[in-house]
Structure formats: C-alpha cells, structure tokens
Length: 621
Figure 1 (cartoon, rainbow, N blue to C red):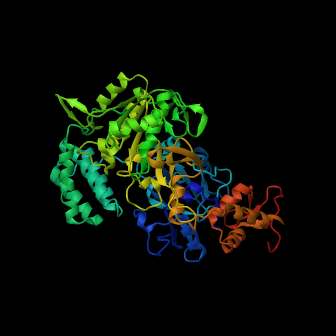
Figure 2 (cartoon, helix red, strand yellow):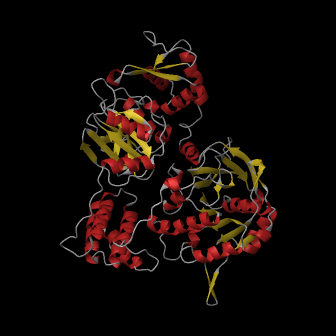
C-alpha cells in the first residue's frame, strides 16, 4: 500500500496525537522508538515528526490516536472489497450513510472512516452476516495511509445521528451487570463501579488524580443513595489506583471524600427504575441560526471564555464590549455593524467599582446607567459573595428585573464557583456551567466568563485555560489574550492579541489586536491567525516561519513541463526543506490536481497543473 500522507485532513494533522508503527502494526513513540500507549499522551508526537520518522526509514507507517479528549470517532471496516475490487454492498451502504473522510486501510482490503460524533456505547467488533465492523473514540489508533477512497469527502464531517443509527443497527448495548455476591447494591451501581474502576486503572500520567477524584465523586452519589456499599467502593477504587501507579498518599482521602461530597443536597440522586428519559425527536425541532452579540466572536444565549495572563487587559476587553452594548456603538472590526443596545450585569471580584470599573467605563464611553454590578447576595440581613452554585435563581431574578439585559460578565469565574467546588473536576464544573448555559439560552443573553491561563507551556491553547477542561468544553467560543511576539529588534512588544482557541460556530482565524497605553485601551488591527497557530510559532519559530509562497512557486515551476509522480514530489520537497504540511497548503492554493492510476496495491498518484491534461508522467519524471 502506498502512503499518501498529504491526503490526510489538515484538522487531524495539527492534532498532537500521532504515533508510528512497525510491520506488525505495534504503536511506537515517534521520538524514542519505544512502545506507545493509546492512553498516554506522553508517548505521542506530532504529525510532522511521525512522517519524518517514516521517511527516514525507521518505521513502517504512521497512526492517529483516538484520545477521548476530542470529537473524533473511527469506524473500521474489514474485508470490504469483492473479487472485482468493488465495494461490497454492506460496506458501500455504511460509507454512503456516513459521508465523511474515508481511506483504504494498510492491507488494501478494508476501510477507515473518521467522523465527528460521540460513541453511543462501548466500541467493539461485530462479525455477522458478512459485516466486519468496529467503532471507537478512545484507547485505540488507526494506521493512516492517506489513500483516500474516491467519491468520499476529503474533510471530516459531523455525523452524530448517523453513528447512533449505525450503532443501533449493528451493536447490542451491553446488559447491566448483576449484583456482586461479595457486597450489596443494585445492578446499576455495580455496572457504574466496574466502569469507573476501569477509567482509573487506564488513566494516563497527568490526569490520574483527577480521574480518581471524579470516580470517587460519581460513585459517592451511589453510596449515598444506597446503590453501593461504601467499603466495597473504597477497596475497589484503591486497588485500581494502585494499578494505575498512584502512591498511598495520593489515594488515601479520595474515595471517602467522594462520599462526603456526594451527601450534599446539591448532588443528583442516582437513577431509579421509575425514572424515564425525556426524548425530543429532532424532526420536531425548528432549526434556528446563531444569534450574535458581537458577530463571529460572542454569541447570544451561549457561554464565551476570555482567558489570559494577569495584566494583559482581559477586563478591559470585556468592559469595552459592555460599553458598546450600552450605547449601541459599532464593533471595532466592523464599522457598519452596531451592537444590540442593552444592559450588562457585571460580576467583578478583582476590580473596585469606584476606582477602577467606573473610570474605565467612562473612558470607554459607556452609558453607566446600563451597567449593573452584582456585588453580593444578602441573606438574613448579612451579605455574602455571589455563588454560581447557590445563587443562580437570584441571578435569574436580576435578569427579569432588567428586561433589556444583553450581557453577563463573570470576572473571574473562579471567584464565583463556591467554596466547595473543585475547579479541576470536570464533573463539578459541568454541574455548574450547564445550568448557567441553560439560563443564558432561556433569557437570550450572552455570558462572558473571564479566567486566567495555567503555567503549562504546551502548544494546544485549549489546555492552557485555568482549571478543568469542562470550562472550554461548555463554551461555544474561547478567546485567548496573549502578548504579541517580540519586535524585530528584540524589544518587548506592547501589542496584545485576542486569538480564537475554539469556536464550533464560526472560523478560528479572525483575531484582533489592541494596546493598553498608560492604562487606556485602543483596538488596532485584525489578525488572521488562530491561537493554536500562534503558540506553535512561538514554541518553534524556525519550524513555522511562513514559507508557503516559496513552496508554491517551487511546485508550480516543477510542474510546468508536465505531471510528476506524487512520491517523487514529496521526496524532492524534503530535499528543499519543505515539510509535508507546507507542501499540501501550497498544492491547495496553487490548485494543483492529484490524479490516481491503478487500484489497491497497484495504485499510484501523480500531480499536474489544472490547465494540463490527465497525462501520466514521462519516464524519469
């Protein structure tokens, strides 16, 4: 099988979860050559590192790891082709139904389909009636060839409903486990115990403590509800934690603390047999467009995250948005679009209303009659700090009193999570943000949550926000505030960048820049860059120096005299120090056409200019 790595979707190529493999398809660390674990990100590498390692002859191929930290799901089909090298009917039906990026597997006999969807149950193989199918979204990897199946999309599509239908058709959900004879509890409780212990046992370095804490919290709910025996839960979790490599000092308190936290009345009761799921048929739901407060940046009825290090002007940005909403002013990136006029509810734990908030808003030209600071909640004559855990109903009452409310700013959100909330616990953070998102959608207000960055130096900006990943997961858009790169003369830049780290409702390459001269605030220019690209360039400036134009010119010159075999182009590009991602971008921008001759193991690709005919390369080309 010929490797055509340039066909692999770019959104996968930028992910940091690549491995290599040997002839036996054993996953290997791209840097060390040691065994790679699909549960340990420390053993993964980048796409470019994996491709280069294969080019150097060290490995047989590359692989993409399904991590469980993103939305990608793989569908593996075996023995898909008949004797005439045509897709078998069952395989064609699945390929057509999913309609997403599909490539021919390493053997030439199977297919790999990658979609965006959640796996409805456990991924496993099914072999019945000639169908050989497997689905998974974590703890596994695909050997990637880039040998794209003609007639299928070149990108990865959202296929949640199609995956649910496919799962229902081919997979039987596992039956609930029976109560264990060694202890007391319900079948539901014992199934949950097995699942949580498995997660703790297989947790990779870096998230083992968080995984144990989350498992203890979830199972503690079942202990409190009489679904499980406490001693059995503590024993099983302790055993799983030891197997994961945690020390006694890290294990001792977690299991029992899970029960203590779960006895709080704020926690949900375990599922009972008399409870029913509330289902909505999507055909009964009318599709509605996204409504924007600030087009492509802050959506109405959604949560937006604004994250950055202290002193870079995060609060200034949020106050500028409030000021423009208060007067219906135009947005800084579009002089023809006005903000919807309305009021703002401001929760600010770090800035004084008198000496900081009011002077800044006056400078920004705000109508301060439309800015309302929620400073505290009064109970029994005593004031206390507002809490998103306890006081969401109070916030809703405030919104009802301000009928033109368009915006809520929470700065910083960590100050309003309550005294008992673990901001690093996905479960606890989700339990707070989900009702907040529901409130925002119900009252059609935009919610902007300001937060800090952690001290990690990773290049993936989604992992840089403080606390749990649930913060970025709950937000529709995440904006990172960062200092621009140093000036050419080596001096520190005073420019700040507001870059998109995540957006599932718009593009992510439309950042903005601003300066904060002597305590004031000025927007500057748009920045055509995402947060992910910025952090990659900062971490390795030589590697990410823009060379696409040079690569494009080189490719066009090469193809002027006729088509050239794709493998030869990749080899020559490597000699010119042009990496595969740059070559692929240059090919796309230049409109170069990729043609295939032959089929299966005998297939071969060549590239040609769009104005040239589909003619095979001449001998020696």
